[in-house]
Length: 364
Image 1: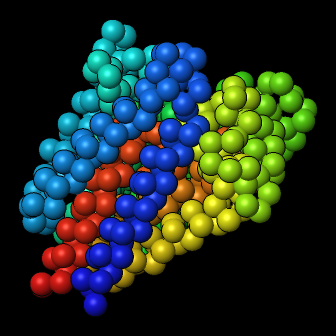
Image 2: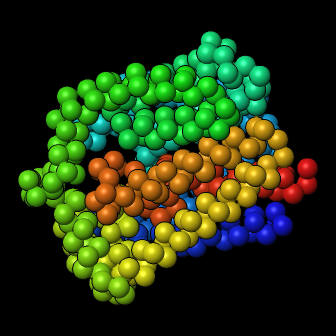
């Protein structure tokens, strides 16, 4: 049974990746030709990301995932160092006021993606070792919160609120499933609300995003432009779409068409049928992933798989929600589909770890 689940999980993810390859080429071809005089510029880079991600996933699958327990703290320390280094002018690459990337020729590495994985591995390891102490504040709840707070602070300095909130939600859900006292979780959540309010409404561009989400037509040529163009793209596709390659919004109307808003291009070219198909594939991914979690051979594997699945599914929900205009703009790519560099690579690595856990669960 678990072998079929593993095969279905891989097949579903592969279909999503193939859809991504086709849609990235369709969405970026004209823009790539205009900017780089090469219509396949982003396609070729994305294929290289697939190759790198596949290699790393294969390496992860070749080892026993339980060895990650001994690597959890070193991996976390490396992530913290990289998050610090990326903030240093000259080392970190700054784009639109955000310093989130290291630039290596054709590849940009985002250390926050490694930090997401490192925190999930650390929390899964902590839960598996400290099960009896989780209901105590100082011994069981404070250590993972201190780690989360340290990583979140460094990511916020980049700044990147979307990744910070997503990681926080994933860790909170992992601890909730681990039966940490609900009062502990609620106390931290309530204490963070004033901070979140200040981070959103005291920063002009974030405040503009919220206001444009509530009513994008207040500033249709400014902060509301992306949401309006995204909804136009989705609406113009109808049921069956305009046809592959026939999107009009990708002609310099919809910003980030091949990254954050690729779901909108899917809706325009493949219609309601295409968008529902993608959503169903993510539902199948969640279904098969839950089977992997349920059949995990140990507590570490259970919570590691839970954290990875929560991160991927949460990013998918946020991306689709933003494209449809039911969530504020967050800048999170659509897993397995969007052109995303290090984000895409770590999604494939996460898939490799899930398959590793599933394979180990097949032979406990």
